[in-house]
Amino acid sequence: MGIGRTLILAGAALVILGLLWTLGEKLPIRFGRLPGDIEIHGKHSVFYFPIMTCILLSAVLSLAMWLWRKL
Image (tube, rainbow, N blue to C red; front, top):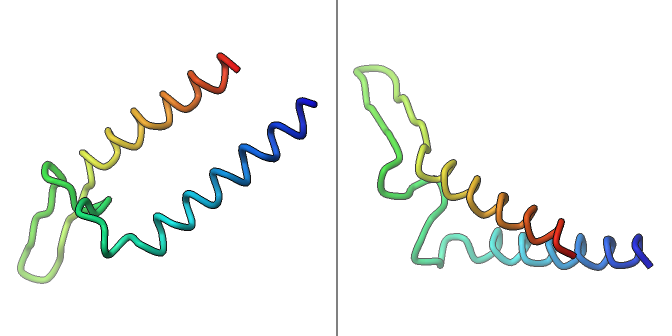
């Protein structure tokens, strides 16, 4: 029963990820371009560090792993 539940959850996660990937341009929040992400334009280069995106992703993954352990 454990492997079946794991496969179902992995499939659901892939479906959700696929929907977010497909509809990413139409969502009001674009991951990687959140307020707080650092972007510095130089003369011939651009430095970009998505710090708020990393923090948000870390919080979501931490919550998902905490819920996974509770199951």
